[in-house]
Amino acid sequence: MNIQENISLKEYNTFGINVIAKRFVSIDSLYSLQQLLKEEQDLFLISGGSNMLLTSDIEKLVVHLNLKGISIDRENHNDIYLTVNAGENWHEFVLWCISQGYGGIENLSLIPGNVGTCPIQNIGAYGVEVKDVITKVEAVEKATGKLVEFSNEACEFGYRNSIFKNAAKGKYIITSVSFQLTKVEHNLNTSYGAINNELSGKGIENPTIKDISDAVISIRQSKLPDPKEIGNSGSFFKNPVVSKKHFEKLQKEYPAIPSYPVSEMEIKVPAGWLIEQSGFKGKRFGEYGVHEKQALVLVNYGNASGKDIYELAQTIQKTIQKNFGINLEIEVNII
Image (tube, rainbow, N blue to C red; front, side):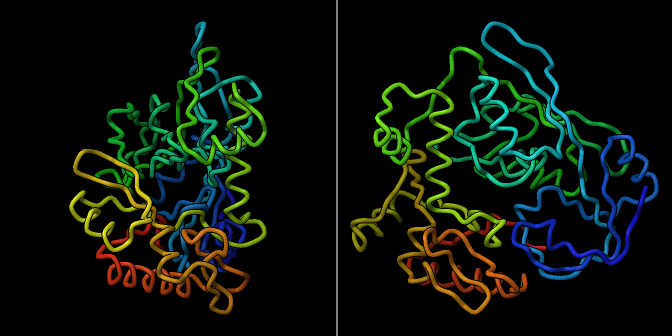
């Protein structure tokens, strides 16, 4: 086990923030992880680095979780059950599934990060959440080094939420995720207008899972910057859910406010719209700012610090609260 010292984490986080890991190790097997936990438990885990904003150097031992591999557990006429190790890139896994004809996650194409982090915040896009296809999550308990299995129900999934962000936070290291996908009778989800518009523009009336994936990729690429070109972590804020009463009050002042019903009493409002209406879209502050095409995305143009970007996020939060009376929650982990 090769523990290195004073390693830059710039290449290990999609924001491209240059902070230093005082000690760093890459782990590529479950056995190595369990052996490491016998010696140290106070660790800082990094996988795809896609859902974090690093604001200072890391004193703890930084563990790069690099567990690879996809296995087929079982299958029948219509369903296939897969177990995927935590270090697999999420988008590459989605594309692999589509190439095999496995459906269920095509709407989640081009979401940054690795498979191991997808259950933590229950990633979702265009009407689909990963909880819809997860059957179980396996994780190592840090205190004991034992492998523990979480059923779908035990994961306590919610909107961009799970037990791993709450009661189990910091107690487990996710090592693999298991999925149930379809082989024949795919449940295609084209409910979002943007997908329908993209398909219609291509003259596609009966889309395949690849057609939907291609549409999602096209939409995301038109709105979201590639982290390899401009540092970012995708959507920085959650779309807020407000009471129907509060929404109706806002609607009187802003008739064009977009919305998505969550229940009879709750309405989801796009955070990007709120940020854009407040004048932040496309604003640049030296080395950082708000993306010109998608107000939900905060960006590092090169040499910004995590603190710079976090201060901008806080300014946006205060402005949204003042303008709309809405508490905008940060989706990214601030470290």
